[in-house]
Length: 490
Image 1 (cartoon, rainbow, N blue to C red):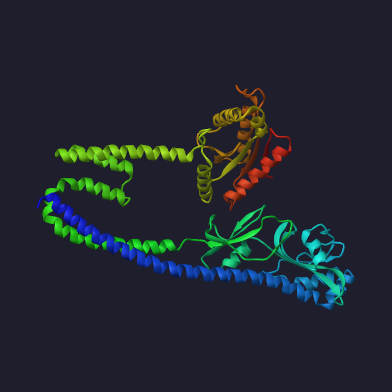
Image 2 (image 1 turned 180 degrees about the horizontal axis):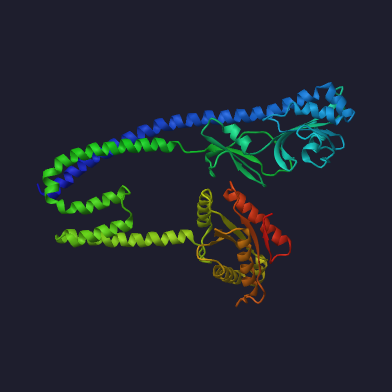
């Protein structure tokens, strides 16, 4: 039997055994792990659902206790703010943040969380109107400019004559969400038209599903609670399966080496270096550029024509892959129209700057928006709009330093990250950008183009959302103040 046939026969036999055994191990482990994984997630989801229902029941229970008190009824009739405050503050807890007594005109008589604050008119609030109309309200609405779970109920004298309202509210914040998922591997997120909150630092939920709640919608629109995995523990099962798979391959390869020692290694020793390079690449000990360098060295050392041809082919292939990899990396990080960094790259850089700031570094950000850009597109067409975007991006790039990070955040909006720059320095750069853009005369657009800029600088414990929100707020103020302005955070 020729060597070729020996290699082919032994390889197929060993490879078939390895693949079959590996598939069996991985499939068995996957099925077992998946069943346990799903069961655990179901139990945890039901636990979170139950905790949420308990929060709502606590709100209703607190309201029922207070409305049943004759002293509370007397206090509302007599408008006794002190007595109502003393009663309501006794029931404030981690499950009840706000207790308000309200008269039939919608005026707050007393607040459990603030002794000397009363008299506010809340007659226009949706939950007040619904409670006056339907006797109760259980849902989500704004209370003191905070989105809350709220239960409102009419208070009646002798069970018949309405004399006022009580509202019991729980602020929807990170602490509430964290308490719902405490002790689980789940994450819960709250989303409305005004904000998005999450119990953990994970931005995306895995296997997300909605929390089953029957709540009335107040002035807060599109409010929803979503449950999902905070981390994909199934990956751990897959890692274990991979380990078993590698062990199986290792055992099979040992037998394989012994069987082919006197045939393959004797005749194919010169191929060992090339194969080792590929193994190192597969096991992440070499990147694609190091593969090319190593193969080039092998080409110079080996004399066998076949080995040289194989090495040359691998070298050319690795070089093309490396070039393609670099090109793809560049494309994935830049905006095609303006050639600036794209949003994904900006987010990565911002995260990096925040980590560096924990070690004493600092930075500022500029949120930049082209004024009345929609008018340019609508009146002159998208080609002119693209021209304005390209030239504006070039002007901004000419106005910044080498180490600054400028990118297109979206549409006509740009983000500039300024390392080691305080608020005053950032405002100087912002003003320079604003002036350069305003003074430029565009070839395909006869009118003056201006930009509005919002400036914010790093604060301790900042997150990407907080610092960008301050910059965006400053930008919004610049827009409202007439555009073509630089505004900074308070």
